[in-house]
Picture: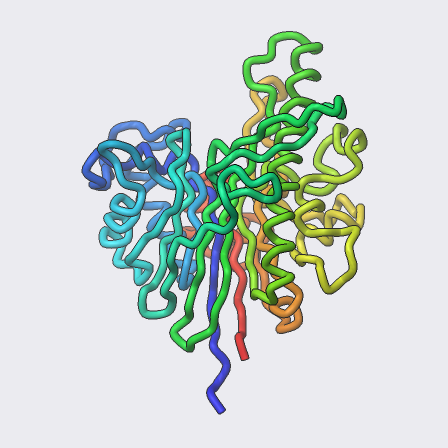
Length: 346
């Protein structure tokens, strides 16, 4: 009988990773400013090298990965980053291009995993179309379906492990709900509701894909930045559930639910115990705000193997807090903190 196979998989939103590379994918670890406030490119790049090395993951779903376009390549840039810091996650793969300068790209160890881009669904289908297509959903309850498109199409991967296990991975960067550009209280409310509707529609689309995989008996992980979480804002009451709860399937039988322990803690309503994965500066209030935005959801069969989740939070994780170099690097590298899952596959 073969021994169990152990894997560590991470999701990490790296703020303005794209600004650390030139068009040829070369790392710009110099004294010039990065896109992070008062942090040079050398400092941010070095901090990321420390964080990725410390995580020692078999695969990292990089959210806000470097851009792919006519000149730039997200995979080429991430592989350059891996070489610079001697990471064993030396290969990278992405799926459909984003409309922005932020891609979703998996950086992985080719000795442990073999992933391939494997999108599901058909463009033009009315039932969970391919993620580079258009989803028809009535956002305004006016009996006229709205046309929903992902600005950052989720990355769908079929993965084979070194031990021959098959996994499905979906990397997600859902729409932000922030009312960017709003100037008056009325505009803030209108844009906030409009953006939340679009974010929820994206999550309904994702949930339809989850249900397809669960019906086929796939071992599935859905991970990334949902820009949302249970109990995160007052608009949630208008719509019944957060987008995260929709993807999890909180109202369906247990055998059809996805699971994430941090989402479960937030849903329990004990806000003083709710973990956080991101830290933002609020200039009007002159203070930081923390939120739970990043998740790794697993299908029931994987949940039954009792995985170990970890948020690499610089203050709330004892090992990160008590390792000064790592603590500082986590604060310098991004406004999000990595989330990892340790799987034991029988």
